[in-house]
Length: 163
Image (cartoon, rainbow, N blue to C red; front, side, top):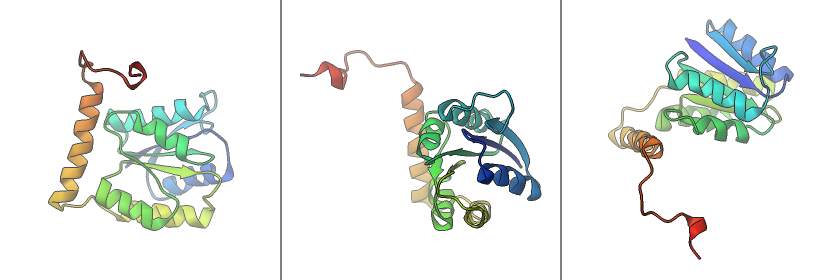
């Protein structure tokens, strides 16, 4: 499987992430601080990794920043991406199962190497749910992406336009 990985900082856990993915037999495409000469800003490198998922050049992505929050936010701005910030194995399992998450977001601050292994084990062992309600919720998210990328509707007042 091809996995796109980004980190805004060259931290030991980010380097371990790349090594662990390769040891598991995945092809890794690195971004940000993990790729010499790349822009290490979390918004830039997280979006780059997420775009590879959205355009089909990567099956999944793992995006990292100090808290994981910024990386998750940036990745989720890419239509077709369902990024989940996971700080434990149970959350990773649920994100794959119920949300069909295709991008894992990790905190460089919170994720130890043993925890990283647990999260990756859960992420890769889990498959998207086939339950109709779960599939419909994922489809709703896809429709939200479509609505967001559609041309703006006229006549709708912005919140900032209201007094």
